[in-house]
Length: 341
Image 1 (cartoon, rainbow, N blue to C red):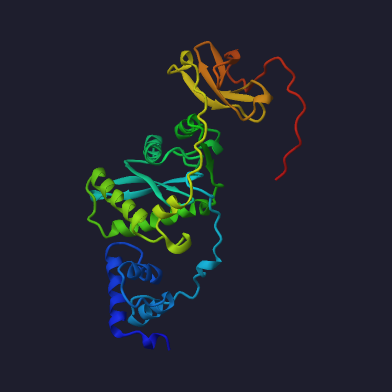
Image 2: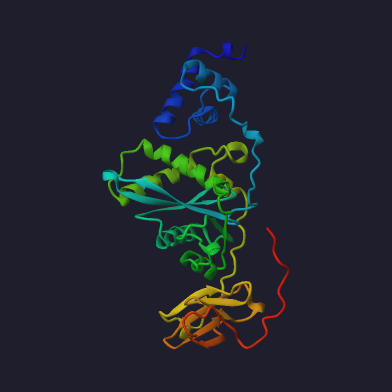
């Protein structure tokens, strides 16, 4: 009955708006068309459910009965801007089949596209570049969520990545999703899909610079023009960012003393059993420092281990080849409770 009261002219307008959005590479579902017609001050604007029926009857959309209703989703959202950013990289292809990577950085609370950066590969340099760009524009976040990739946060593999070192120097907490759980970065995965729809409607870029310009244009539309269906009231990310005060930035970690800032200095982490790993062996430092950051210098004949403030924690001559553990002369202490799977 409701659909019968919608004139053919209004139906044609709705279908035209949908086609224009689709041609631009933007979301063109009933919700997006409804918001676009409101923004264009068209009268009357059919309800979302009516638009869905109009599009199905016109053959430009189909019914998806297995799709969960949007109200059934319950996602965790940080309470304020800069409480947490999400970082991820996605592969893209330029003319001639040349592959590159687009780093995308978004704010968890507002869904703001904080920064994007195009690089030839998923490298630590590219990851640091996009985070630096985001910090320059919007301040320092409290934490950064990424996957466990080697260029982002390989901490679960026992490796300290360059991005993690950079973040901790600013006081930012680097966090990762659980392995084999891509839904943790679901907001960023959805962001990739929206970007690809936009790029598919653009001329295929020949250079990184051309692709960067296209991505920057997308970020501007995404932040300021496109109502976000994941935000209350379907407002834009820019409005969502401005609606809540930004959280206080973290305190930077004190920098290491200058005399230790040599090329041979390597940042590491003291393991749970109080050891530091170097050249195939574990060197005992202290269980009381487990989990803290340390720095090691590997000289030709000995190993030096320093704390974050530049204090010498331990010094060892290199052991005989094949040695797996080097103690500090102190008893290793009682073992903790055995962990069970």
